[in-house]
Length: 208
Ligand code: DGP
Ligand code: NA
Ligand code: NA
Image 1: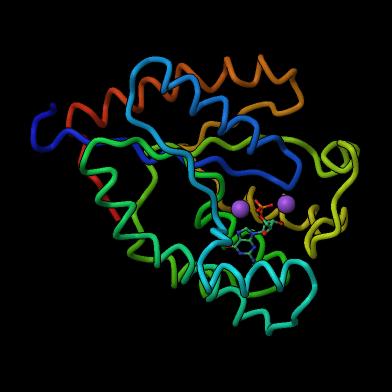
Image 2: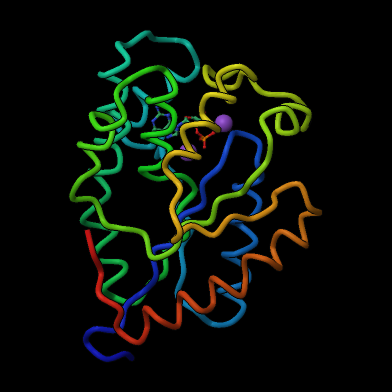
């Protein structure tokens, strides 16, 4: 039971590949569930949809697409979840999202695409209430058990992505030192996340 403008929080985790986002989103999920909150963890790209399958094949180097085309597919993959996202949030469910529009802009602009062009298809998607950036140097990330075989998992490219993220970050981002032990990273996240959830429950407007 909540008042009509009470809602869930839209919390986004961002960072380079191997920064630890995926472990932290499952820890946050368990933490909030343990406190009795309605919460789900999502990730983008969502590889389960037909658009997501095209993205997955591209990332696995099984298909080749023009840089603009794949950019728009990643964006389309977020757009196809927008209405569900909005209804979940409005019904009081907090969403913890592993990657969102910032990944879209950071990874594509790292290829040399114009940043303003990269941002435009993201306009109108729901704005996060909190962006948690798990900060790690590209070199340290690369040391973490090595990269997999996916297209972007290369040190030189990740250095460019890190530069793009720096250009995108603003005062609203919470920058977390992702090189600390996993429990310490979690500790840095939980307090901010709880504040954010409380503010949204009190009826903070949901913006685009
Ligand atoms: P992940 O499933 O989080 O490992 O993401 C797969 C890869 O795709 C990863 O290298 C980050 C990249 N990525 C995620 N979202 C986007 C996006 O919107 N655009 C581009 N170009 N790359 C993305
Ligand atoms: Na990855
Ligand atoms: Na992702």
